[in-house]
Length: 189
Image (cartoon, rainbow, N blue to C red; front, side, top):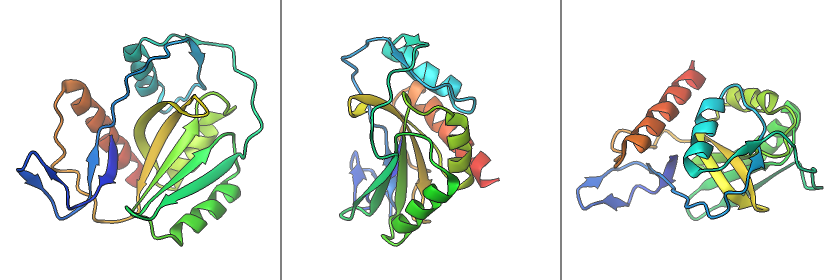
């Protein structure tokens, strides 16, 4: 569930309209259910494992070879004022803050952060840094960049993000939204 993804001008079913940005559940139909390794996250382990189980993907203990990529990068969608940070391997708090500062200059309403689940050696240390900067759970992205899986976190960079009128059509989506709201509340404290 990606909060702030939907601009305020969007109507849902001709009855729900808000003056603020809203959110969306992005659903993936996973065709490649090959067993895969993911870094173990103490904070989000249950949520991550549940998604993999529901997708029918077995988890294995063998970490794949780490390819040579930029450890951290970002993009900006200036049409809808959204920034996305991609983390391919552990980076220091200073490296992350420098990139986050660059994104702040872009005045993004929302910032999404995608963490590679296959190549981060100490994902808990990385998640702790990101949580301290206000990032909270959003979901998983299967085969997203480089045909690999990513944990997505999100951070509101605007007060104009609506959460009250999000429509959940399934108990699974409702449970996910409750988890996201609880994680956001934990971050705020």
